[in-house]
Length: 105
Image (cartoon, rainbow, N blue to C red; front, side, top):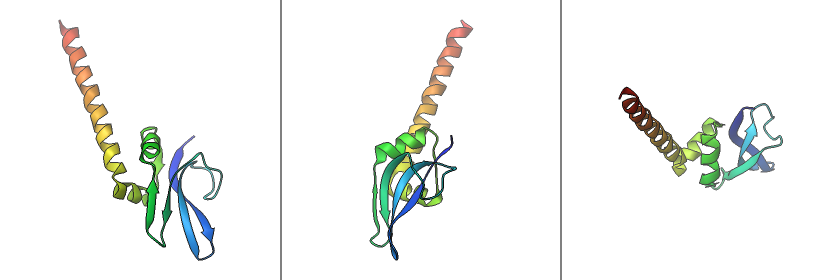
């Protein structure tokens, strides 16, 4: 199952707002979603995102849509994600280097 982070439309005619959701990529735009991450109101510019849930889904491999990626970038979530990814990569490299040194002896 491939999970994507995208927007689902809510609201009335001419007054939309969107939920940022985690959803199976094969499901239609307004279909059943797995978890709500935040909201986006384009009329007022309001953007609320639960960063802990967003980071959880990103680390589990969910692919954000371009709009969701832009919202996450504004909130600093993409920066946090890339830093945590880099940190874990550095830790893996340290462990592999130390194991190589001990195996050579």
